[in-house]
View 1 (tube, rainbow, N blue to C red):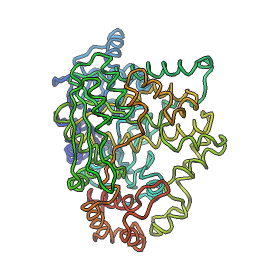
View 2 (view 1 turned 90 degrees about the vertical axis):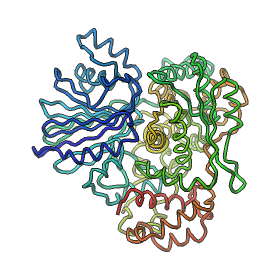
View 3 (view 1 turned 45 degrees about the vertical axis):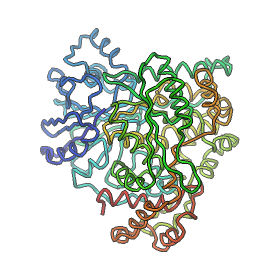
View 4 (view 1 turned 90 degrees about the horizontal axis):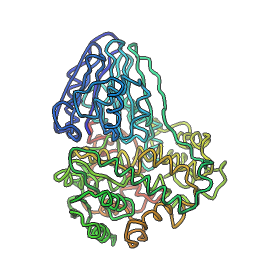
Length: 594
C-alpha cells in the first residue's frame, strides 16, 4: 500500500519536478517506508512506499523496466500476484523482485490494458510507455484505491489524494455546483468523476484511461456485473445460496491474507467483521490481533459495542485491543480526521476510524475490515420499501427514500451562484436506474449503491483514515467475485431476516448466534451526533470565520437558523443538517481553500 503522484506535459516541456516532489511529500503518511522519483521527457512519477510485499529495496518505486521501456507507480495489492508471476515466467518474463508491482508492469507488457481483468485485488496504477509517450492510468473494479486527477490544457497531474494535488499548486479550487448539489443530496457523497473542486476529478472505478502524448485520451470501463438471475443458478435452494456465499467469502478472506507482515482485523462486533475473524480462525491464522473503538455516552446514547466485540474475541481467542475515546478528545480528533480527508465526509465513524487506525498502526501494518457488506447484501433498513416498487419506479423510490433534501430545498440553502439550474442529483440517479442489466427495482438500487455511492462514502472513508497512519485496510466483502455472486442472488434472500438474510445464514454456520441475531449496530460517535460541547464550538467557529463569510457558500440566514438550534434541523434521512453544512466549511478551511 502506497501513495503515487506525477505529472504529464503535453506541450513538449519537461514536468515541474518541484511540484511532483511536493505532491509526493504530502503523501508521506500513506507510505512512510520509502520515497522515490522518476522522470523522463515530459513525464515525472513520484511514490511513497508502505512495505507489505517484498520488504527489500527490490520492490521500491517508481519501478522501471529498461528492456520493455516502461515505468510505473502502483498503489494497492494484487492478491494473486504469485500465480500471475508464475504464468508470466512460463511466457518468458524474468523477474528481479518478489513484489506485486513488478507483476503489474510485466502483466501490462504481456497483455496491455487487458491486464486489469486478470488482477484480483485493489489497485490504482500509472504506467508510462517511454517510446510512445502514452500513459495508462487504471483503478480497481470497486474503487477501493483512489486516483485523483488535476487536468489542464497542457498537462495532467495525478495523485493518490486530493490534498497532494493541492500541494502541487496551480489547481482550480472553485466549487463545482453539480458536485455541491450531490454533496447536499446524498449525505455528502460526490460521485466520480467529480469532486467538490472544479479543478480536481477522480478516475472512476473499473476504468482504464489511455492518455496519448498530445493529451487526447480514451476511457474503457472493464467491469460491471449484471444484477440479474442466471440460468445456472435456477436450481439453487436457499441453503445452496448460503453455502455459495460462505465459500466465496472464505476465498475472499484467504486472498487477503497475502502479505509479508502480520494481518489483523478491525472488529466492531457486528456480523460483517465477526465473519472475517471466524474465517481467518478457520484458515488457521494464529495469534490474530483484533481492534475495537468506543466513545463516551452523550445524550443518553451509548458510544460503544464492546460487549459484542469482546464476545467474538473470546470465542476465537484473538489478541484483542480496545480503545475508549473520551468526549473531550473528539473535537481535536475531528480536525485530524478532516486533514486526512481527500474529500469532505460527514459520517461520524470517520473520526472513529481515524482514532482507531492510529492505535492499530502501532501493532500491525495490514487489517481486514467489514465495509461493503450492507450495500452488497442489502443490509440497510430502507431497502425493503424500495424493493416493493415496480422496476420502472426504481429511480423515484430511490430519490424519495435516499435523498437528504429536494432540489427545491437547495434554493433556500445555497447562494444563487452555486445553485444548479436543474436537479442534477436526481438526473444522475434516473440515468443510472434506467440502464439495462438490473432485473428488479432492488437490483437497480443495489447496483447504484455498490458501484457509485459506496465507492465515494464508506470505501473512501476507510482508505483515507487508515492510510493516514500507514495502515493498509483490505475489504473482503468487496472481492469482485463475491460481488458478482451477490449481484445474481435472488433479492428475497438478501432481504430476509431483516436484511442481509443470506449473509446471516452463512454467519450462523461459523459464529455464536448472539452475534448474528443482535440488533444492527454502527460506529456511534455521540459527541458529534448530539453536537456536544467542543464539537459545537468548533462548528460555530468554522461557520462564522471570515473565510466562510467571504466564500459565502450558504445563505447567512440559513446558517443563523442552524446555529440557533443545533440539534433541531435534520435532513430527510435524519442526519444533523448543521453538521453536514459545517463539515464542508471545516474541510475547505483545513485544506487552505479560499
